[in-house]
Image (cartoon, rainbow, N blue to C red; front, side):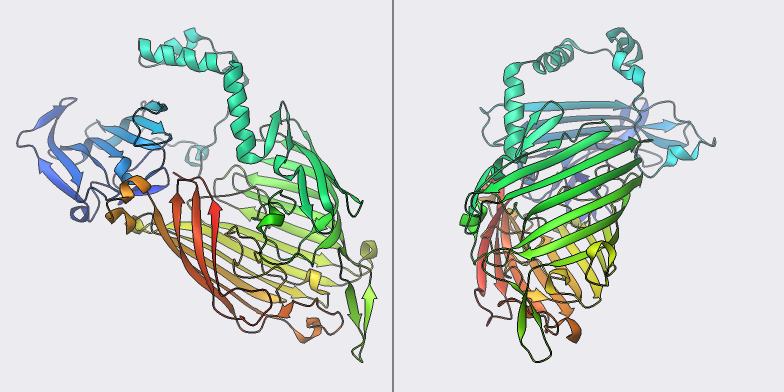
Length: 601
């Protein structure tokens, strides 16, 4: 509800949806207008009174009225309203009023914004309980033509809470508030204060948090992930696991997290531990030093976006065998700095030991083609990584980060990673360099929805075994994964230079909204295409180390395309994917439908 729309823009963004403004450059394409034949006075200013309605009741557009100053033709007041026909989840109605002030009869400035929203789980069921949200904002003391500090014009808001803000009394707010609260508003305020201490409310809030995130909040720590407490796979048997993490809201400078796990069949303990010490600076800035250690199972070619490898559903959702897992021992120490909101970097020293896990082995190759088993590979060196996501507060420097899930940013998010390995350093066996760069964004395309894209490229220098090459993300689950090639298997292709492109265009119901029954179902359509282009140099193409049975050097580009329906029951989507080439590879399908789950307005 804390939005400040600009009606002079062609499109107004509300709850991630694009609405054409009633003063859009192409207004006649979207609206019907009705002009009142007499002037109306708003705050003593004579205005033309105009009502407007969508040309098509199924279009994503506003209905409302506006008052246009009779001499400057500026907007003096505008009311914007949309209802359930707009195909926005959980919203029965949404109303915004914006009032403008003609300051010194020279400049028009926003004066007041009122927002009233009616939210509910099922929009068409009037008897179902929901809640209203109401916001009132007033802008005053506008200063014109006087120099102000540069910080006033920072590219994003910086809200600084002073210590005294915790001790303000009701008397203070009554004196500072420009208007008095009505009896109803006061009752709502009292209800909000009371419900925070209600044990039933706390129980429900904790339950929803746990189901939604997998973590159980316990004071300053979270216990979880509950979906990985028990799982099964052919090698470990029943896998038991428990872990904890520091709560995301914690401002304590020492922040640990970790887990332990045990497989009943392989009878082996696994674990992870991480300790970060954070120096919180000015808003948007921090310094951090930390250490990380992990000894656990991994799957090469599996996306960072997929459900955890030890999720209790992973085994039953697979569509191809998991027989190329590795056992990794990672150790690293690092320093990190967040320079400002949206930009963070990390410098690490690391060592990684990789072993085969299960019924296969690593092999080295001699000049005559014979192979010799190799117990493990070790790579050590330095890594510099970072991410830039303009204005975002929660930004992490890992190149493949499962926690930062950005949506509808103003500008693209850019991630980079450069790794240097040196032979002999911390038992490293290879000289190695790798550079990765990724750009991702969702770009609005007016009334035609938005285009989501992920473009990634990278290059590997050095002669290394396949665990350290560029392996595209496959998906052997029946659940779709937006960061993966859903028709590709894990560890199917290898390259040492590559470009990966994922394109999805979401029409947001542009076509389906024209079908009457979609007022109830609110289905939305999308199309997609994905391509992986790469090359594998001769020195890394099984010259010194052998590949496992189903790993191939990339030759021609890999393609997959498809379409999908989303917003099914408001929480799911289904992708219909066609794999266009490499159909002679084992355990592959030319066509696969895959569902997935998401929560969107």
